[in-house]
Image (cartoon, rainbow, N blue to C red; front, top):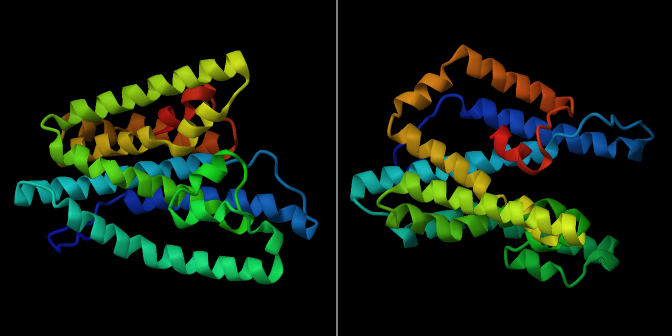
Length: 260
């Protein structure tokens, strides 16, 4: 990755984590499409949700690490330049595919092109995803919407926080508290929308990745000790194997947080 100072930074190991996440999503969606070709689905393969959570955590890690580098070098974070970089990196391909998708739907499946399209135009694709009104060919856009929304406020937190670790921990705890309340609301009323909002946006999962970035940036000795521990690595691989076999479940409400 290239930091705001123009220097290229290579963090060993992240490519491997990204590959695991990408393969998780690819295998899941390939499996879901097998019946289209008359092939049986493998019911035990259910990786996509965990793979996306890994991507979110990586995103939180990388963006926070870059912001910390900028803050260290310049004494502050140039929010305007940050947004310009994000726009140039994401928007061209985002809107190019969106335009192509709209033309394809107009030609071949006009009935699928609903008023939900405006959520995709405005980078809120997670909203129709939550309410299960996604436009099929654009269904995957929900995660891009989540990331763009996270970028709206996260640079300000990194810039303004004098005690960043405490701020991130408070943010995670607040989000987890809201998730617990949403879970209890679901059990009591059967209304799962508030819980779906938190489970889909997963801002706290990105914040967990951001916490790792701060500790890594500070060269935290405990983090290094855990990261290079053989036992910790074996546990991590064990979780990945259980995840691949659809057998990783400690408690539904916090599985993704534990996995991170």
